[in-house]
Length: 265
Ligand code: NAP
Image 1 (cartoon, rainbow, N blue to C red):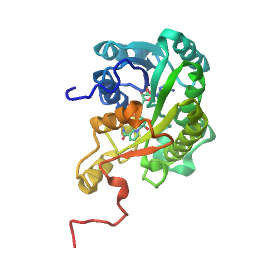
Image 2: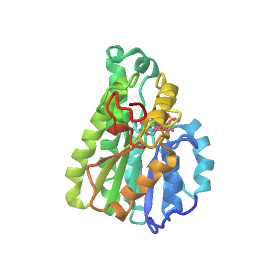
Image 3: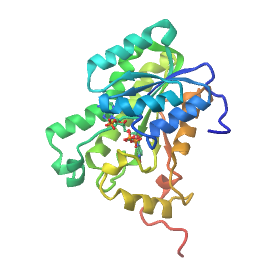
């Protein structure tokens, strides 16, 4: 990566959610590394460990196990990063999951178990992570999560994930209010649709990409680099006055009403 300002020199960061090179977390990890940070990445299971290890090696990053539904894994992160030499300056939570069949079938097809899983992995995990890392954060630490506009507007096939993202954005504000007096900032980036493994689970995602590219004010798709740039702002001292914010990084798509087109009279 070129032309990345050294905004994170001497900073230590933990990034959850690297699955492959398309992951938003990977874009953020590459940018944070280029900006001077020392990183730790996580993997949720053995299969992912095999994928994440070589990627982490590219960045000289440490690797730890963390399935966010396992309290023991979260506690181990708290113990490891609680050691004085390991304390963190930033944490990126780029983790979400919902049952694919239920997502496609519609909101009324959400089962009790599907609701619980989507909310636990996609929302509660951010709160649980903040709690687990309470004693592991350096002064002025920054926590960041990833969300999507389906939280506030109805997006076809997003269904229960929209409900979970609404809860995640609300949790971001409550965490910001509670941790603010300790100097800890908590923010979210609301990214436009980007072709990743998780996104491909959403029915009609290809059509969503085409529509976004054709209509967003910047007339292009959101990129990993767009999200990583915004993340560097929020994770570094450049964002020192911003907390509890949901920052839209979607090439402007969210400003449009349903029938707005400036191309046709
Ligand atoms: P991704 O590469 O598939 O990343 C999702 C990550 O969540 C994967 O690493 C996945 O691991 C992990 N995960 C799922 N369940 C987990 C668990 N129990 N414990 C730990 N990790 C778990 O997709 P992505 O698009 O970059 O997603 C990152 C974040 O960005 C998500 O919160 C997503 O909702 C958000 N976002 C994405 C878009 C988009 O269009 N791509 C737009 C806005 C917001 P496994 O692969 O092993 O399940």
